[in-house]
Image 1 (tube, one colour):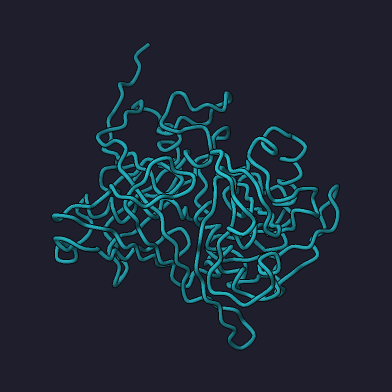
Image 2: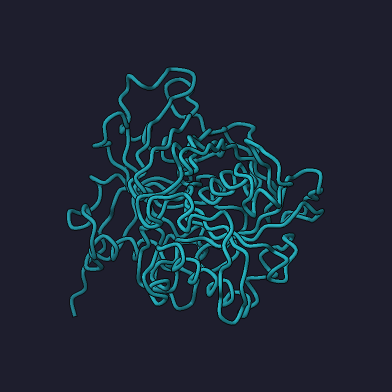
Length: 396
């Protein structure tokens, strides 16, 4: 039997925030994968090493977690007043599909760096020394992200002393502005609160009727109270990811929340839409020890948040979910705002399994509808490896 040889594709392996993924320039992809469709999905699945019934992604670039099973495709922007178009694909670990329904806020921190280093940003917009302002069009959700990328001697500055809980080593700070982050184009009827309520009674068979804040900001997110599902908000990954009953409960909540938000039309669609919505549970501040062993005092945070991504408790916090947290915290009456003391605020610091994170957002109400002009947070990014990925030539 004759087997197809491997082909090589130019790629860069990057960390952005508390995630990492394989980055491609659109023009470097094989022709069949340069447009959306089965060929592109099949290629990215093989690059990452999915679907893998062993849940290890040994035969690919994935790291067998939602934070490390990610792909990014970038190109010069076709959108006016933007530098780069950014398309994010969340690759399922054990199932044969790529979820294109949302953004990755963490990898957003690496987009500007990649774009500058790979000639996707006009040279006239890059200072010799200073901060390059990269205008990113997030194609999954139709939103603008502004990345402030440090530049030294005309090149991206990646090293620095900015520390980010969930990332072992310090690096250069990259500030991100998520403009008009609410009401993504897909789902939710174009409203920040798709049900029209700040708090809903969400009926979940086998669980009960839960108070929930259902919000479209950064990424569609279902917020519930930790105490309502038997948790304190101080949990680390082991407390939930090793409990099949808990994971099934969260997936059931997620599916019913997605239906209530109008993101799916029937419950069975939830299985093929794993990336969105997210489920998060909130609690008032409390002392706990982060996964690194770092002590977090109740006085260090405004509230506690734990969130699930791709069916597992996240080791830190998804960047897009952080936008949702900051937005909801700025709106009096949401579960997030109430957990943070129920006061008006334009920034919030929350505790997550790896430590703390601060995110700013200013919300206003116009004609009965809530809007947020932008959400701001700082991350960091770094190239881990660059060159080529190899895949069997007949895999797509």
